[in-house]
Length: 100
Image 1 (cartoon, rainbow, N blue to C red):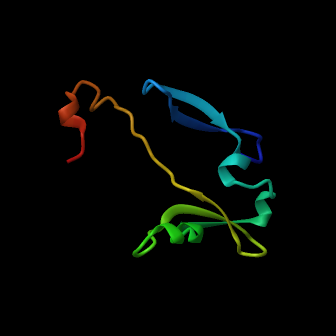
Image 2 (cartoon, rainbow, N blue to C red):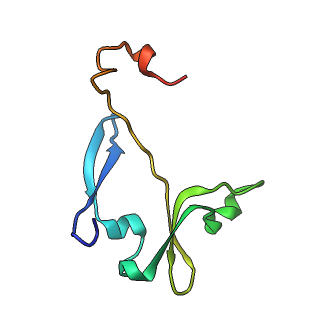
Image 3 (spheres, rainbow, N blue to C red):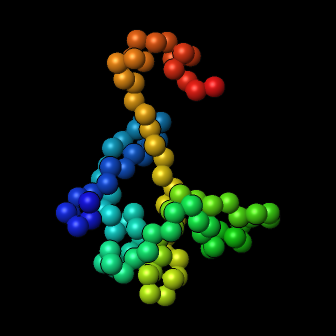
């Protein structure tokens, strides 16, 4: 996406609980303007700057963007996947579609 100058879709909640669709530049998502070949993507890692906020074990997050040369942590990224109804679930009541 970044190499093709595409932006990520970003969902945010407004003041009245309204959901807004925005676009987010990949540089903002990565927290860096370094080129891709200068970044390292560490999946299911601990973002060490958060350690000062926890009293027990620091949990892993989905992605930590790092500087590939220095190995310094640049930015944490938590990825949330959202599923939409499909042809097998669209007619079901909401209580039948929620995972239990």
